[in-house]
Image (cartoon, rainbow, N blue to C red):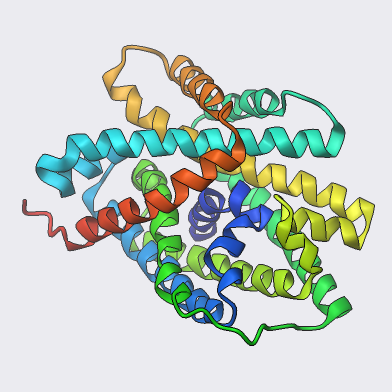
Length: 331
């Protein structure tokens, strides 16, 4: 069960921005050697805070993120609830927009967001337990292929760590766990009643955060050691994979889609779980409506959505984490 919890945490984070390499460039690679310090800080935050947040959600017996927000935010809860729901819907839209580009690049098929949307609805209607099981099966494969690409590139080109260092990147890197844990917070709240005990909750977060930190580090080294032109690609890790071989690029493109899919499912679960208590509709109907709305938002485009949503939500996520961890359950 610890791995199931950790895998859902990983699935909530490894989405289009992560697996494409864009998040790694934005928060770590572009700051040179300072990115290594930022990586260490981000890994500690993702692991320790992930464990503490999951443990707190279990203790509070949350069933959705609205209940969690109202417990810890007081008079600000209604505004934060609306803001949080909007960002989660935007997160789902980003995954759909990214899947559109990935499917078209791989197979030349337009409308990839609609194909992914149907797949998301299919898994959502099967319930949270099925989502946990699906994540546990998919994530090891995803991790394995990222390891393969990283190892191949490092063996081929050797380890290259830049000499320049932009120290502003050290505090900036803390926005990374801020927005990722902010997104994951909704998932944690949704599965809290499925957790058997505090130990499973805490160590699920620890394991998930450590795995994420290791993957970030490997991708950071891969981007430094790969061809410089890859950094200008909208999907740098796929660019590098294609330089290894065409078949490697094809498989990584499929893996990238899987990352988008699992994250889309996680975000869709959180939004649908939030809406279920306030609308008189079946779970299937709610799931379809949520994914339909995300499809409409996704038409704004992958790059535009990710460039606005993630940095802003980093600050929101940090604030939410602060309020949650200082909450003593008495107010």
